[in-house]
Length: 360
Length: 265
Image (cartoon, rainbow over all chains, first blue to last red; front, side):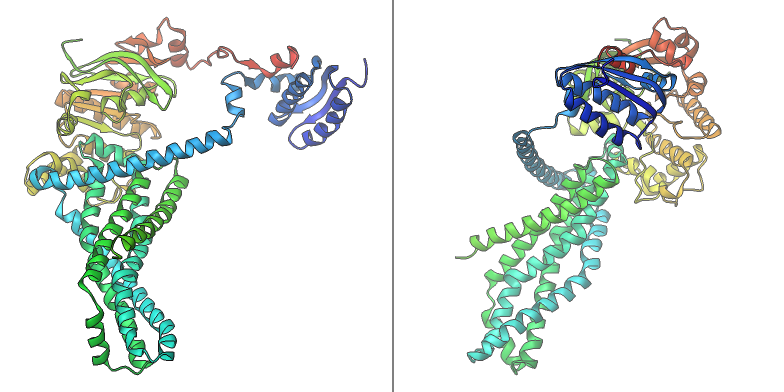
């Protein structure tokens, strides 16, 4: 027997010994590439799945190099291991071959398109159930469910929104005050803080905070319910999950988000007021007169319209991510995280759109 | 179609994505009988139940409940049809954010105009029926696995359905709890003349409750018999192997690694 083409494997062939054996035999395979090899397993004392897979890899490698392999001997231990494992139960080619980059891109585009269509369908279904409920009392969204959501969205978020808005107002005013002072334009701090809070910062800060609190909670709750078959259970009871889970949130946020935005506006302006009277030496009456003169109804309404649309984005993105969940606990985590990221992105994109729309 | 059939499945083909699970399956479920659906994992037992309750849309074929084709019903009609069907999920699928009593009251508040007092009484009756009269104010997470399944059974029974579907009711339960649940299902069928469809792997359960045994495999029905003994004596090798707990032979196309190496890698 030619020792260059005789592969002899001895001892324990397991996950500890296979790497060393593979390196040694690889050298032999490269040196005699394309030859007729023999495989001797008569001195194998034990073999685990790594050993069995190694034998298979050797055979495949030799055949791929244009050679052949002949099994000349096998010990009882090796025979038992090689008989346990089977191949040919599925399409091995399909398992080994991943999608190409182009296919992955196509897959992502398809997912994006499907996601957009599903999000729109969710919006239409929710509006449908809300409107149908007005005319069909049996299908009405329960008032208690709406109130429960309003408490979660409104009361429980009020403190953090008030605090953050106050700080934002303070910071905006403080950063601007030094510049305004140089030009003797201290009085315009009222205009700056008033317009910035009502038209931009109030709705935006409220939406970002609610995306973190309510969007994530919505996604996590619906995702968990989807995974534990609670959503399926609702369907089998003849209860549409969108009517039961999404419509109350939709109605609650439609009412609550503008109210929270008004609170954010007021607290932000209060932050500016504090800076104006402590740092810029303005009197309260001068600040208020300037503020009232600067605030326009259009800015206030723009902010409130924005806030409603931001609220809808938060609820629909959270619900959509929740219903689309795949897998177990990890899936819930992914759905929750992605709902917050996606909602914040869409809120900012919508803000940019509204800013352009209402600019003139 | 069997004239006594309450649920009729005709030429049903269904699956997930591009993976076909059921292929051209037809079966009638007779009123007032307990039919157990048996078969290996992935043979389509739960898929069949999902198609019956409209959770999974068939690729082709149709499901009829009380002579109404599910696919032809609008949203409201479907909800009404499903209110006559109770479903017990494998893990119970109780809504975890509300109490056990609120879970059972839910279908009653949606599908009836009953007053709150009457609904509360019905809930208590159903809980007593499944031996959980004291658990109404508890959350589902505070119940044991067996109790949760019984509570889920009470919810499935809330609207006194004509048909009860059970997806592996005894799975994961100790033998005593599983036997209690079987006795309960049998009692419900005998008392309320309900039609019950049970997906199960438990031979003891099949023996205890089954009027009919259906064995699914390869996307269709491999065997249909009146008793467990009949199923055990099936001439179909896969059915006989299943009930005798024998290992199936090597699947078609499969080879051991020894064969592969002996053939030259």
